[in-house]
Length: 84
Image 1 (cartoon, rainbow, N blue to C red):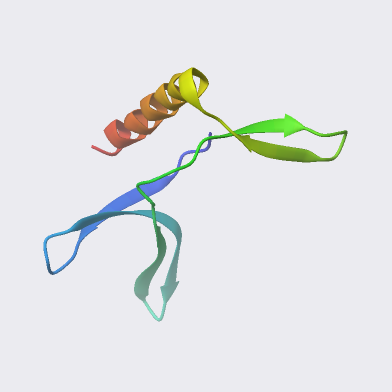
Image 2: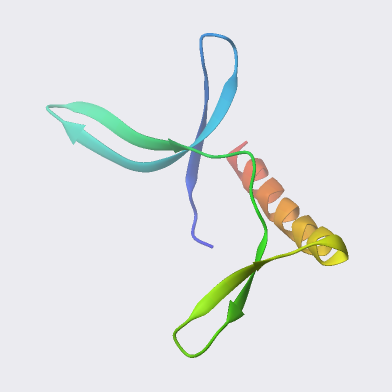
């Protein structure tokens, strides 16, 4: 997984939102950034091959979902700790 840059911004109501920094440019001596919000929800799907060039995705449930979700949670937690 490539290294991504994240920033947390706090709005006028005190609500923190995590954003991914996708680009940064300088125009007329001023710095600008392009950011996209990082959704706090995600879906876990299993990638299955349906031939050489085709792949599809299927939903995951039960113990399989619990197992895979714990791996994703550990990886996401590692990203959060890298930012601190």
